[in-house]
Length: 305
Ligand code: ASP
Image (cartoon, rainbow, N blue to C red; front, top):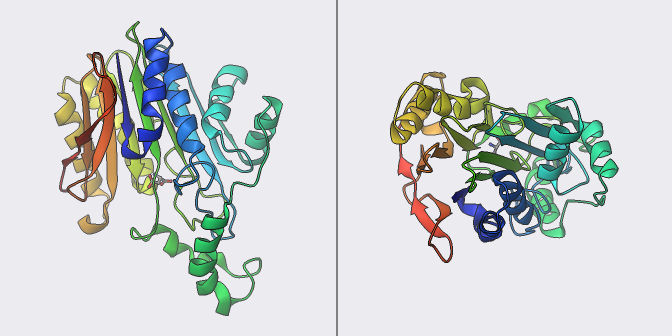
């Protein structure tokens, strides 16, 4: 058994492990771990306390996938409910759909009994007001400004962004993966990233492995980066080779290499794990396996593109 998560999953990985240790499924484990990150107000990239879009509204994207069947559920642009991963699971288990966005996602959240709340914390609001609200001040009110004129701010790699990834393999050998994010801070309202798109930010197949991304979602949306890793595994690549190939694939998108920002974690069918990044040596992920009393922090391999 194993659980792997992006570094910000450290607040949830031991809880995810306890699910597995108690005989629970990989699907339950990745949901449990992700929920704790969504609850963390100090994480401004996921769930409650996430940074908002250009208008100051928090919009969440999430997806969950099980490897045995490749069933999946995803939500995009969810407002007013922190547990985006649970709503994504409800899409998978209760609806004949894979992806539900916007008001429909919020409606489903209410139908499964989640509590509506304002996700914009005072700290996140203060950062938004001090930052982009000031930029917009000369343009008019945020309601009438031409947001498309300032939307490029949302793709500035220096802007705050992030996502949580969880991948688990349970005692029965099944894989599951979960991804949740508030997306790029200061994104254009309604913008969906890679996290709610199966194959882009998340992919899971018991036969070969699973992969989940953080980074510039517009790139993994175009390259289907998570699916790319699993497809390479299916073609016989090693885990290290499959991750590197998916990152190198991003180098052909016409983006200056300095701007290619992508990180992923992956697990193969044998329970091996690996994490890579296009940037910053020092980047890490967390994992926990059999015989370990808590999680460990592992370095991500830097793959220059
Ligand atoms: N991938 C996320 C998105 O594009 C953000 C991130 O992980 O930094 O919405």
